[in-house]
Image 1 (cartoon, rainbow, N blue to C red):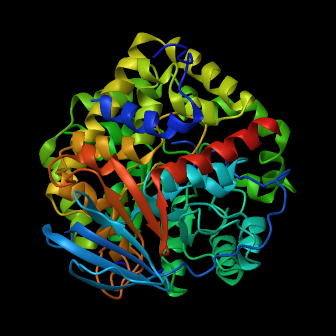
Image 2: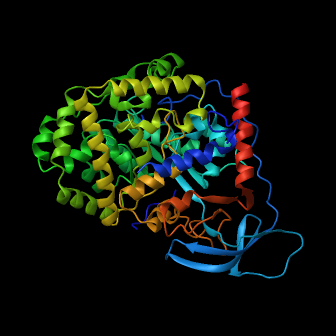
Image 3: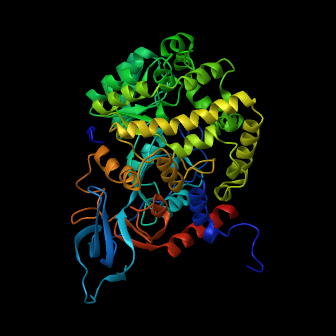
Length: 531
């Protein structure tokens, strides 16, 4: 990863598989951290079959005529254009050709709009039991690129061997982290430096950190940069957002996850800092206990903690709720603007994963009770979710009130950051055991935060391209760019809803109609249910 820039009769009772993804999307349109991995915190991939080597044959030549090409770089719309694709690259975008052509697939795109492919910049799909199915659903949502936020050693090895089941029916893997920095592997400065160097040697593209001691945090940031790697993720409780940004922490996920962001944006922040518990949830002493990491990732432990991982808010201590509530009650827009200015100046990128935060802090929302996405999950994961949701519903009213306010304030903060010029990217922290972790939902939540349709489009196209240092090959539909784009039925500049009204997806030059994408999801879901 490059260093950042600043920038009817007999109708079935439920939805059929064929309409499942569409229903998920339109459920999201109708709606106004985990622990870091969207599944077991330190997934060992135990029990997953070893996939065959990935094969992605060259797509046949393709030409799509009479489309309106939307360029998120400048917000322009070029009507009646012809997009020519060969070898997985866009060869030309010019006035629509009238003559037919032999030897290539020619599509009449009249009335449709073309935008660059979407990028999910926070996913844990390779850690999921039904990874191929979930990747097919991602492509159906228009996602052509993805960033994997955790890569245990076994996963990095599979990647190096070309065994990640990537192909024409999946998004492209843009970047992958190594094992998450935690007390298990990074209890000291010496150990964190060793771990970062080890991950780089294994092929990790960037470093993700969740919780370490304060001195280890700053050492990790500087060592990652010395090794030419970006580093970011969550905020340990002893680190404020602004000091992390000033230290060069490259990106924040989920707004940092802890109460730090709300303490820093409070008019009563000095008093709240004095009250807040800044100790780690897991002691660094675990780094000196043999096999502690393997035990924590074991099947016994992950089953025992499954519901907590689906909603970490359930593990909040009673003492933390008054601190959180006071911080939210005293939210200071001036302080939020000052913090945002720091982010903008330092180029601290943000993937707020609002769709994920909503499932955590508004888990009692009625649409989650019987959401179409639940059909995608195994019976055990469905049961885990319902158990978790019941536990959330049974929380004291004061807790749920605070959590609702947490999410509402998160929307306000994302809007403030965007207005300040902080680069914001789309990410879902899924797919996982919670419904609503999908790209249509993320688009809707970013719009609720105040981003315009064009801004949301940029958050999923040009901003990720800049973050990755790939603006010369992705983020626009133009000659020389990778052939990853989406055909839409309606103008995406008019409404964010239209970003999810997909007609077809072109992935590395491979043309997929919505019907074909649905058929792939149907097949993989049927296979998963039969296994």
